[in-house]
Length: 162
Image (cartoon, rainbow, N blue to C red; front, side, top):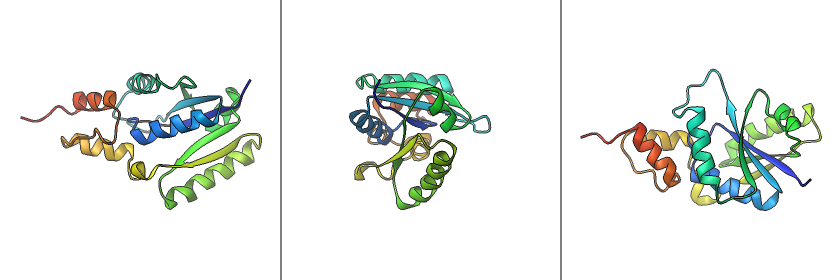
């Protein structure tokens, strides 16, 4: 069995930045599990089932990627799926401090799982799911920031105003 990596997030919705990280991680590892976190206190725009369907559609061309869900601590999920690596994307220096703190905590809980940081490509560095939702909610074009299936799903959530 090869190296299994987990790329976790809420993916509400999946962006081109997320997709770029999934593609790049799949070039580095034998399997990339894209794990959608379940947070009982958050109220996502897309249901869990919608996020799974969107992710499955956009990662179809990436044979090493598969979609799953997790509830609870990511480090426990990694042990469950025998993942050796957690992949985290970094958009800016401010992301690093937060992500490093979590990486240290995860390493303390399970030193057999490493965290790998991948910087976003410069053209995706400012993209976030919340930015995509905000632009779409006001009728803006998000095709530069989100894959086509996500754009269609956002248009269904935020139909154009007459």
